[in-house]
Image (spheres, rainbow, N blue to C red):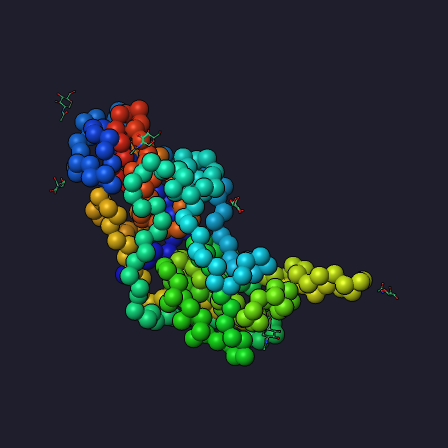
Length: 291
Ligand SMILES: *[C@@H]1O[C@H](CO)[C@@H](O)[C@H](O)[C@H]1NC(C)=O
Ligand SMILES: *[C@@H]1O[C@H](CO)[C@@H](O)[C@H](O)[C@H]1NC(C)=O
Ligand SMILES: *[C@@H]1O[C@H](CO)[C@@H](O)[C@H](O)[C@H]1NC(C)=O
Ligand SMILES: *[C@@H]1O[C@H](CO)[C@@H](O)[C@H](O)[C@H]1NC(C)=O
Ligand SMILES: *[C@@H]1O[C@H](CO)[C@@H](O)[C@H](O)[C@H]1NC(C)=O
Ligand SMILES: *[C@@H]1O[C@H](CO)[C@@H](O)[C@H](O)[C@H]1NC(C)=O
Ligand SMILES: *[C@@H]1O[C@H](CO)[C@@H](O)[C@H](O)[C@H]1NC(C)=O
Ligand SMILES: *[C@@H]1O[C@H](CO)[C@@H](O)[C@H](O)[C@H]1NC(C)=O
């Protein structure tokens, strides 16, 4: 079973030396690259690796600002050809005809989940996940440690393959503002994470200052992680066909045009970037991508 878990969505775009009509616009298949490998750039993996060191796509539930069950954000292009950015695929590839948001695939059957890591004992301070491909969060009824409610929630969230369930204490919005009146947080991701990424220990002051009383700091307990047993394969974007993979290796190949970092493993978004890429000095449009 191919794993869609990725440290980062990486997209390398390749050139074809002939027509500029992108695949998303029904351009010809198998356009001939009539240049020798010496004449055309190959994948600039050094620039990709350098950019990797500058981009941070790890996050978790922002309970201090966002209410539960907020809509999932669009895919963000966090870097383009080595320059850090913070923009949507639609903005980058505004003249692309391909769909620019993650494909809304048919709803999965009820998934089965396996515990990746368990929480520490009740009362012991623990930490929540800061990880890639964070989607959204909810709170579930906290009269018990409600694992099933959290897994059920993941089933309802598009592309959710992993949840992190934990209690967050002394969070003013959870305790007094949000209508659910629960501090049992269920954070959804489209990448799978493990206990090495338990790095958010809380420690913020969330309650308002009253007189000279000490404001209690937030803290986290019983942080467990659950991964879906089966992952759905992305569908082919319009005009594209899967050539290989997923594998554990990336292309290092001629006809290279550039790269983008994406906030999600978003095959459609990468296709949209390819379609909107335009021509390069070798004279062709993008006809292939490796994500
Ligand atoms: C594209 O190229 C591959 C490999 O050369 C070949 O097997 C395939 O039939 C070609 N497809 C079309 C539509 O020409
Ligand atoms: C490729 O380039 C060579 C030499 O420039 C030329 O003779 C040949 O016709 C070209 N082939 C195509 C398919 O354009
Ligand atoms: C880039 O790829 C080449 C060829 O595979 C390899 O020799 C080199 O170490 C790579 N550079 C980095 C920074 O990964
Ligand atoms: C990206 O832009 C959005 C909207 O302007 C902002 O809320 C967010 O903090 C920015 N993210 C980064 C990493 O700069
Ligand atoms: C459940 O959450 C509410 C709101 O945060 C909190 O007041 C209450 O103490 C929590 N109950 C348990 C058992 O943790
Ligand atoms: C946990 O995730 C980190 C970061 O993705 C990875 O480096 C590490 O190998 C993983 N550990 C296990 C036990 O899977
Ligand atoms: C807090 O304020 C009250 C009244 O303003 C004062 O009596 C008390 O000594 C203060 N406590 C501390 C620890 O400063
Ligand atoms: C999109 O815009 C770029 C830059 O203006 C241009 O080079 C490219 O040809 C356009 N692509 C399409 C598919 O219209």
